[in-house]
Image 1 (tube, rainbow, N blue to C red):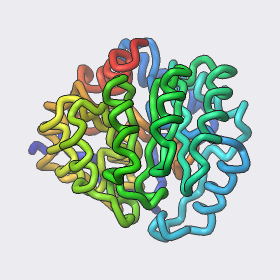
Image 2: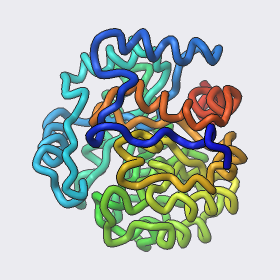
Image 3: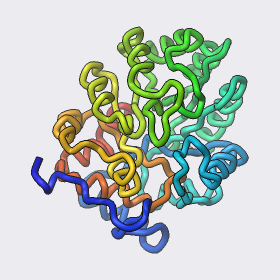
Image 4: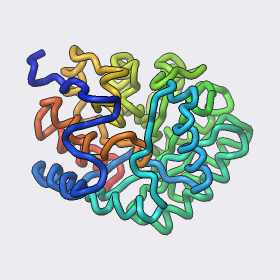
Length: 314
């Protein structure tokens, strides 16, 4: 692999970046990025909106460096009120985004889905998001969410601590596969492994539901190559770029350079994700991290807009 295809090495402390910082003219920097590509804006499939008290608990978890953060310092760059966060994404030129929310225990998913449906009604540029958990009744509330217009689901195997191949989830996966509703799923073992993370458990789900439209969050880090393999095997499997290639992640879980040609070949199934607002660096840094891969403007246009626009009919 030529050196110009290699992501730049991490610089400074984890999470730092020399190209841009939150605030200032960051919105202008983001707009200049997609303007250079000749696309009408960005589509970000991995942004977090959830009830404020739930989100604050998530932030508290990062602040206290809970076990699932691998003990990393993780300052939240966009710790702002909900209205400010949605306004900022619009200033960035993000045409569509998601409300990635997820339960960590039974009895929580249905309530979160109700909140998310209301959020989608009052936030028209947010793709109506829903979630699920292995529990009795999951098939019913997943079907209800789909019928209510949910366009994307979020599953978090690491935080939920569940096996995605749990029999209680099989009917729900079937509903989603039949409806063609994508599922953004955190099933990789980064930043810290869970009981059921890694490619094995989700591969068992795909073996039973090969048409399931899974979007593997974070490119499956750190098992990047194994999840690339699943995308190569199953035509409905996609990957999102969330936190990948940033200085923060490259210092901890670097993407193997030998796998870049495979990522390039899968360019029609890679989608922009950011983890906004729960990131320890500026939003624009994710974009620059993708640009410095050297995979070309056609690849960037597809990743930052075209692929998601096609998937969601935008």
